[in-house]
Image (cartoon, rainbow, N blue to C red):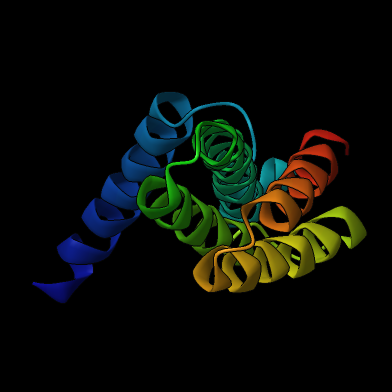
Amino acid sequence: MTRYNMPRTAVLTALFVLVTSTVLPLQPVFAEGGARRDAVRSEDQHRQEAATLAKEAADHSKLGHVGPFLTSAEAALQHALKAGKDAHVDAAIAELKHAVEHGSAGHTDVATKHVEQAVTHLSGK
């Protein structure tokens, strides 16, 4: 009985390979970094979100709204921390930390300058 199973197994294996090779996409599975590409995309999204929130913080600061300024600046800082390692991002993180410190102390004019610098760093690549 095993004598008849061997050709059947070979035929089924060949059929499986043929079907999978035609059904799967033609690009290689690991082309263009798969998981790395997703990580870079996520880092870019965090960077853009940090820039948007930092702009919001600057607008709130110019209007004298300290509470919303701190909320936006802290949220921008959290997104910037997730934006990956880059000289501009690192500089933006430092500026956002200074902005939060000065905003908490009530120094809105200095905090505004720091958050504007953070926007500049996050916008440039």
